[in-house]
Length: 407
Figure 1 (cartoon, rainbow, N blue to C red):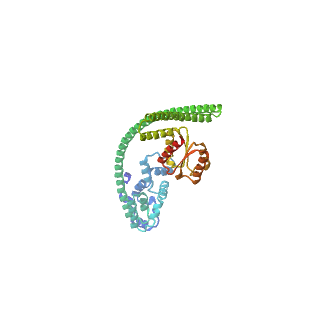
Figure 2 (figure 1 turned 135 degrees about the vertical axis):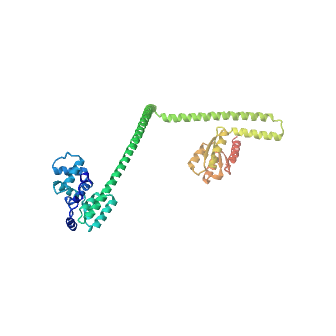
Figure 3 (figure 1 turned 120 degrees about the vertical axis):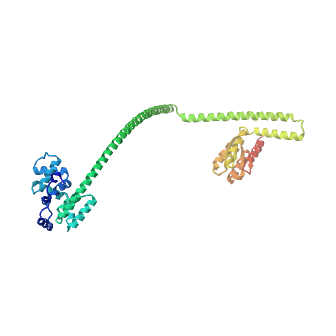
């Protein structure tokens, strides 16, 4: 209730009983100017926001009202006492604004039903439209209107208290927000400093990366120049690659020849030592002499393998390296043919032609290879030893045997 209505007599707010009865019996909603005068202030204050109210008043006076919000409110309440341009604008604005609520209240057939809808609106917290609909409903008598006014008055008091609490809380939140803003500013400053440090580190890393890339480009350029020079040199010297391979082969052959020469010198020394030992033991017992003669014979026979090519036909593939080692220790060159497992007959004929001596391990070769070896050695007169067991020990005995035969 506004203070400009505070001292008005109560009789002014209630029409005579006959008029009240005629209103409650009618099916037409009451208009704003037909409501009791004490309803105008809360209806204008609750149901119309100040901005909307000022626009309606400006439209009613056909200009811009220079009054403040309170004066606009008081003037609008005064205009609601009778039907005029402003009250008509207010009536239309309220009906349009709360059309859905008015439609919901339309089904109420009694004052109790109106009060039930009003209480539901209070429980839901949306009272502005329900307040206007309850006051203007055809079934709202002055008791219903008075009850609605009283409850709206208390709701406004509660809303004022809530507003004060909210304002105090708002002030607290403002202080808290200021503290958080200060903390945020400090965090932002730290963040800015951290970003600046990281930016400097990134610049250093990028500079190092650029230097590394420049060095890589320089190396690639030098490599390209060297490759171009090498290609030019290769083009200027015909068959450079073949000559290079040939030189490498010659170097390898020279190294092997030096090793053979050294081995030959050692064998000659052994032969000379054996000869001296044989001469020194001429007066010894016959048995001892016979043993010494056999040792000397083996040494002399071993010397016959030097610079000879020994072909091993057959044998276990895992023992080939051992065969080679024993052959080369005896001073001979080693060649191998697997006896027809993977190597062909043509290769066997070529190996037989190039060999000086042959050891044939008959336990692991084909019949064709066996007869080829036997026929070739018989035809050419080459020394050949046949070994049945394909082992390193058997090969060693065959090697001693063929050395004796070669001697």
